Every structure is written in structure tokens, then in C-alpha cells.
Amino acid sequence: MESSSNHGGIKLLLAAEHEAQQIVNAARTAKMARLKQAKEEAETEVAEHKDSTEHGFQRKLEETSGDSGANVKRLEQETDAKIEQLKNEASRISRDVVDMLLKHVTTVKN
Image (cartoon, rainbow, N blue to C red; front, side, top):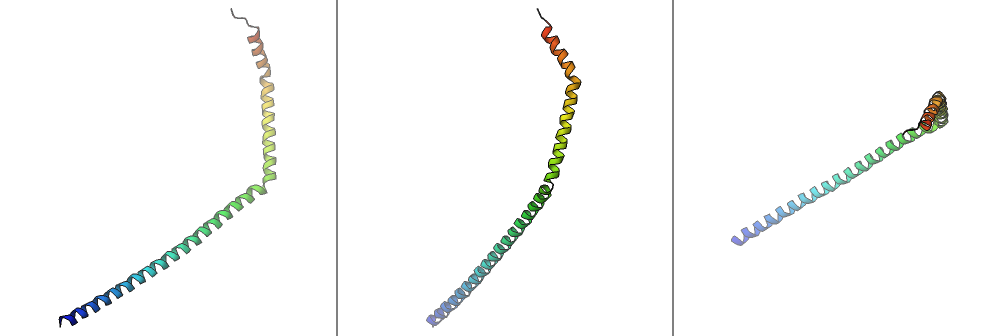
């Protein structure tokens, strides 16, 4: 009698073990599916970000490249204006500088 109850208990334990293994396998499968989905979503998100960044870069490049002639012209005008300003300033103070240099050169200290 005890043998049949032990045998029934063993069958019950084997059935429980089998059920637990199925639950673990189902959980493992679900986990792998979630990881795969997360990886695909991440790859999509990275690709979208890359495209967005590249688009922004190209737009900026077009904005600055399209006006390169205008930028060169503007810089030339600014440079010419600065040169003219420096020439005017130099001509305004050149006499004072010459006088100061002559004073220091001709002054003898004992």
C-alpha cells in the first residue's frame, strides 16, 4: 500500500516538476521576445536620432554654405572698414608718437 502512495507521490512530483519547467520555459521565451523587441525598438530609435541629427547637420551646412559668397563679401567689408579705421587712428596719433619718441631720444639723463 505504501508503495502505491509513494509511486503516486513521485508521479505528482514529476508532474509538478514538468509544469514548473514549462512555466520557466514560457518565462524564458517571453523574456527573449521582450529583449528582441527592446533591441529592435532601440535600433529604430537610434536610426531615427541619427537621421534627425544628419538632417539637422545638412540643413546647417546648406544654410552656411549657401551664403558663403555673402559671408566672404561681408568679411571683406568688415576687414576693409577695420583697416580704414586703423589707418585713420594711426594718422591721428602718428605726430604724437613721433614727438614722444624724439623727446625720449633727445632727453639725456644724468
